[in-house]
Image (cartoon, rainbow over all chains, first blue to last red; front, side, top):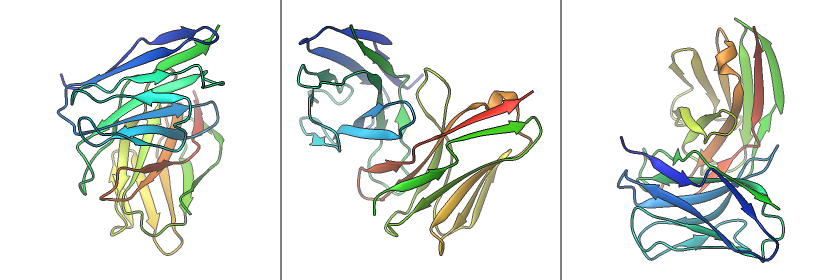
Length: 114
Length: 112
């Protein structure tokens, strides 16, 4: 079955540590996204990528980094510069900016600070 | 101008009742309006979506009503069931871009 796989489901970060969240999709989608979800807030865009080896900052990119070396993979690194990293992180993908594209989400990673 | 305002923040409905969630937008360039359903600890799942050239779309118990002149759209859940208890997000999208704008979510609880 095609889908988006995020791992791990739960992740703990120590002070000053960088952590990487994994996102893999087998839908052959061109576009991939990372969103951050905080309680009572909507989904905020961190980064997105339209094609391999290209990505753009979203609304809250500070303290985060990404790479897109393969079409199916879009890992997110939460760096030590992100002072408030506790949140639910969602990866998503879509076919692209066509008129009927659908944004599909993974099951999320809950990141907490120790 | 890129905000999508969603209300109410939370909603409690009796089983069998109608749940109504409202969203409003300002930018008329948006041309695709999806609704997502999210259960605790899970990612959002696409529920139903509409384009502004129609005023209503129905899929089973879920209906989107769209008012282009008022720049508002709403989700109606008919015959609400306890299994519908979840958080619902509206969104707006510009075709030809990669940017979705999400509402802040509505936590729905359907009482048995």
